Length: 119
Image (cartoon, rainbow, N blue to C red):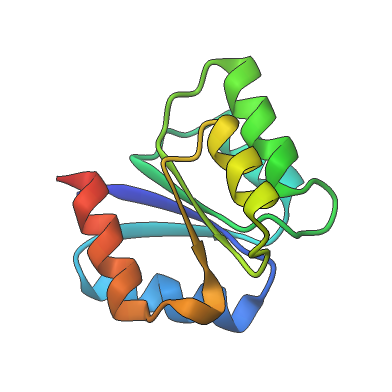
């Protein structure tokens, strides 16, 4: 079973996303800030990371930088409310394989993107 790490500080959204991905056959782990993400990534392997950018303690850009520094090659899909081209470009330059704006995408589309990256 493929494992997905959801890094999202909006707890209701994180729960719904986790439930939807679990029902699609994935094993999810959810953390609510960047420090928790780095802690769990140091101990466990995931097949995909869904990463928010604006979070307490450590933001998503910092997480992307740390993944690079640590040599962690797990694909990262950014899920953010930041829609500026500069933010998208910065996340992709730091290694994100995809980027979507939360308000512009449905949960069904998120699951479809996840399936695309985990095939």
